Amino acid sequence: MNTFLFFVLVALTTVMLVYLYRVVRGPTAFDRVLGLNGISTKAIILIVLLGTIFGRVDMFVDISTGYAILNLVGALAITKFLEERGERE
Amino acid sequence: MILELPLLVLLVMTAAGAILVKDLVSGVFILGSYSFVLALVWALVGAVDVAFVEAVVGAGLATVFFLLTLSRTEEKDTELRRLPVPKVALIGLPLLALLMLYGAGDLPVFNDPRSPASTHLSPLYLENSVEQTRTPNVVTAILMDYRALDTLVETLVIFTAGIACALLLRNGAR
Image 1 (cartoon, rainbow over the protein chains, first blue to last red):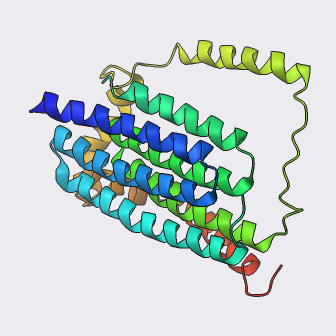
Image 2: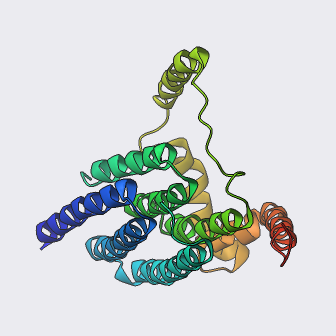
Image 3: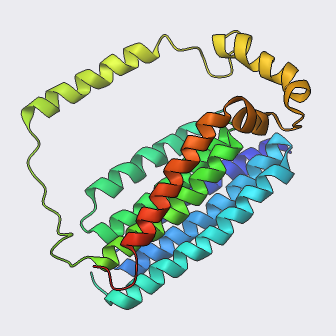
């Protein structure tokens, strides 16, 4: 079971790399926002998985909930900013 | 654990991307992903509370504050001017990094039970904190009782920074 979870961890980290490519290279700002959102969802799942492996899910679920809420706040701030400034390369 | 290596590679890549990207808005986004990866690293080495602070402050608050600053400034203010790197920095900084790596070689290994910090200080706190402070959580006991003065002044600094931010971000201030 632990080996399975470990491989899931490695696979999710690799998926984060793909999103990171989109964030760094992305031609428009919206590509970057979507890539950032993808990275943060992967990070949330990764933290819960780490908690499962360490056997302390209760503590790690708190962090991932905080992550999720702040991710929403950050995404709102970014979209508000883009709305005010208008789309730009 | 072997997972630390890809996460550290991700960390270096996000840091380099945040510096090398063309405009500041994208730099702010990439800095947010850097904070996410850094929080993952903290969680992996067991520093859960530090990971929480990194997620809250680094990924959440810092992104919002950077974007607020960018929305209050004109485009000509935030135009990137890249100066050519001077030769002294090219030679001096790698030497400095070597010196620091050499110095880090003397540090105790991570999780070493015989390092000075875990032979003298940590057992003292773990054994005496409940009788001395009547606080069940050791971290809280250290922060609020043993280092109360330190925490007080820290709170003062954060309060001052909050007032300064509120003053700067008032409506109409430019």
